[in-house]
Image (cartoon, rainbow, N blue to C red; front, side, top):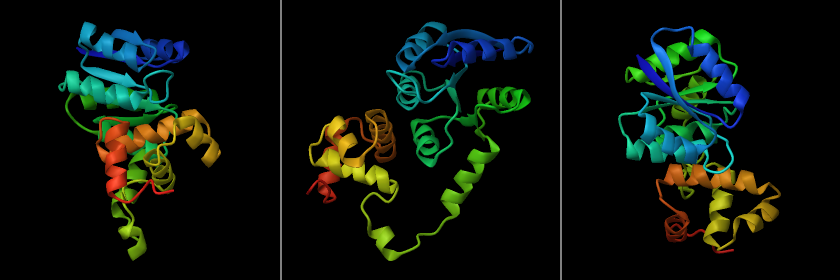
Length: 216
């Protein structure tokens, strides 16, 4: 029996996932959570085999929750099920330790296969996500200047955000400077922390300033 924890801030999504797995004898729902903080508590309480995790939720997001869950319980597997398939979301989830990544709207059989696969210790990704991963790792640097940039693993926007962080700007000031929402800034910062493997803002600032950022 594979025991899953459903993490999504939308009740209808949790209800739909519960209804989906109810028809399969080898999968049962151990619990539900509406955000990353609740997910961490429920993992410790229910000890599931697989956490089916949304990424963008109020409060603690899915990337941070995945990292915290796997630090507390390394044997648990996390399957991301989200609406977002951009590079930043995909690679932030992978760096946090997710074993699978599917896009909402995937076929029921695909979701069930993914749950079974990650429970068995495999990594599995939806077709569109797999294409992004292949393209990322097969793409060669286009110019010497690109390879000379600090933190080449970051996107251009993430490097802009990191530069402003290193300059001491708070999130609302970064949002105004780049003309984006504060939530988008927070999502970029989560991706930056994951890619640079830093624990907090202070550590990111030190890394960035050592690389010459934050001089504006």
